[in-house]
Length: 475
Image (cartoon, rainbow, N blue to C red; front, side, top):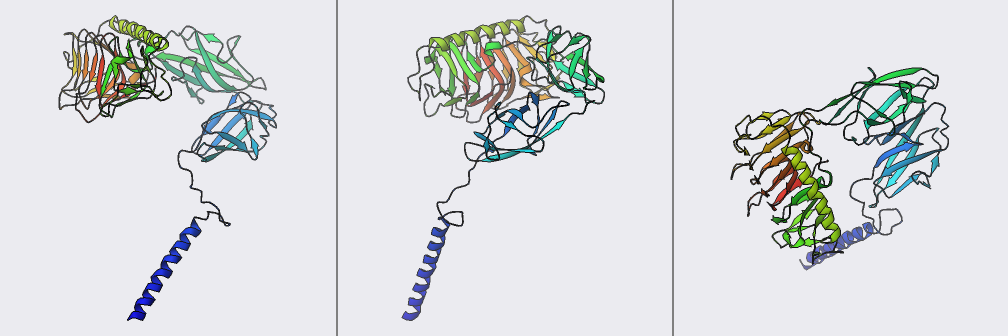
């Protein structure tokens, strides 16, 4: 019996020693010769976000990791210089470090770029260059300066280009940005230079592309405007998810995130429950923490809690807040003075589907309480809601939503509120609210989030929120 116990103990000790040896052997490295174990990097692989050769833009396929570039007829491809942007930290072709705008490469065959990120992850892109034939001639991309979010739709079969811009856009002197294959582009007798030459697009404009062999092709460019009124131009107020007039802003809860800036022309001490991207903290407590991904702009004094600053509460940040306040007022007045429109629900917008246009509360107030509001239209259509007094979204225990369909975008929805706006807890609101006398979002003690895809801008009074997510749309 004692012999068996001794054998059993010996077996256990031997097994444990084997496991230990195996583990220490593994820790010796992931190569054949041992060494330290390297943990594989984790994260998002780097990408090349833009690429051109000698000014000719390439087409990037992020799935296949390929870049295709068509160079003009007669181009020598043996020493082309690439200009690119990337999220990586280093770019290599073989053993040669690449510098955007500097390093030449021979593109007679595919060229493989290896991009390395700060975390060690890599991605490889294969660049394929072709040279256009003597009779090649086409416009490949088209947009207008200042309207990058409204690219033209190029139909290579019918040789047409369609561009839709926001209502109210002046089309009499638009400047086009375009890429083409060929030797020249003209409109009538006038030579066209991308990003330089203006044209009047009140009527369709015909572009003529000439190839190296002198053959030509015509493209007809037609510009149309979206439906609805001219939108408010927010200018300096555009980056703000919240603006508390001259009275500040208050956050309660730890779930608030504002993707953008916030501000007030008030003293910084009237901003409570927030911190911004610089590390400046504005009267946060363990139960009231609001994350502002941009900056907080106010008057003095500077915040007393900060990481590397303080950066806020200065004359400079006050000037920035003043500019936002001024442009918010201009936008408010623009919305308020638009010709009035219909009030299809006698002040109640819930349960309705509305086309682009201006809607005016006959009784002075708008509410979205009996159901959700659907706005159906395209990405260049505009909705404006005018009310002399208040806006109410949802009711206690009955959250409501504004739903966009047909490609409608939150940056094209505007709420001009004569007094105050209130968004009840757990609602999903859309659009830029510009209220004269304050905006209140959710209820104290509410643990679930309320969402605003837009902006809460107050001209005079404060903006208060509880566990609120604000996503600032593009201007």
